[in-house]
Amino acid sequence: MNLNMLQNKLKDENYTLIADINGVFYTSHQRGIAPILNPMKEQIDFFKDAIVVDKVIGKATAMLLILSGVQYIYAYVLSQKAKDILDWYHIDYGYDKIVEYIQNRDKSGMCPMEKTVYDINDLQMAFEALKNKQKELQGV
Image (cartoon, rainbow, N blue to C red; front, side, top):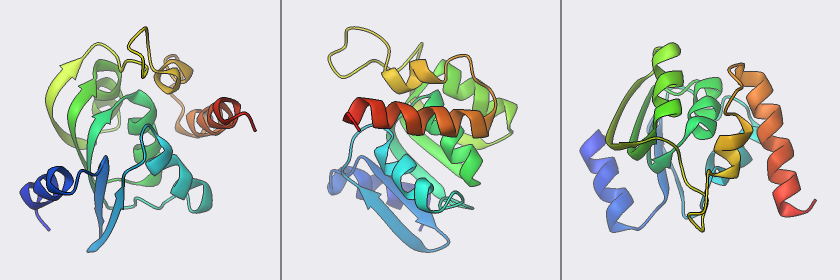
């Protein structure tokens, strides 16, 4: 499926994320990094060679997708830190709008996941930190 078709499907069916993983489609209505992090906890290379279209991509999501082996990322909103890490790892991407950082849900500051990896550049370290932060936020 081409990028335009993925973008249209994301909008038409109100997904938060859609991925074409070698012709197999993965979609989600979940918010935040859960649609990326949860399948990666079971299979770290879940997004290997995938084309991912997401509404919002911050550094946390970008790092997870890079670690998983993503081929291409398109975001409607991309953070500057996500752009920087995608450039660093030479991942192809596109976006509609760039922002300084991804806001938390009540728009009072930075997204907790973006904040968690703000100063981390090691992909495996970021993965572990994000899994721990997700547990903390879920009260597990």
